[in-house]
Amino acid sequence: MHRWSSHRHYLQTKTQPPWLNTDAVLKQVGGSKAFHEFVLSGNEEALEQFYESGRQSPVLGGEEFVERIRKPLGQLVKEHPRYQRRGVQTSAQNVIRRVAESYRISREEVVQGVRGKENEARKVAMYLVRHCCDQTLRETARLFGLGSYGAVGWCCYWVQTKMEKEKRFRDQIERLVRDICQQKT
Image (cartoon, rainbow, N blue to C red; front, top):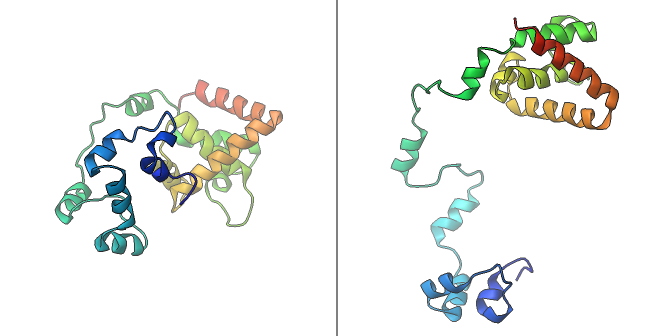
């Protein structure tokens, strides 16, 4: 039995920590002995097969339920703060242009990455597009020609971490944010 398991506390209720309430579960199953037998009986075969099958669906339930959940939701209502803010925010193209100017490189060098080649300006641009334009990871990935929005998250994390460690870099990003947010284009 694992030390972090609460199983032993269901068997010997006098040893349970104050935050663990075993009463409700023990009443439902018929006491400590019944609980222990239930745990030892293992999982149903269908459940075992489900977990052994590898990658699992994020939606659990019967086939009809899963199909209903996976149907497209239709048109989303745009009454949401993200959409309201977009009217007063700068454009992603303006952010990219300002980053390119700051790093003294072309707009294309900011937008198009080269696998295996470090491109700080590209990471900064992704971070600022997310920060200043309130775009989702997916929208930002599409803008930068990335197949995975996880790469955008990683770049934003990289910039954030570098800002925390290096004052000079943080000051540079803060100047860019001030410049970008002052001019709406």
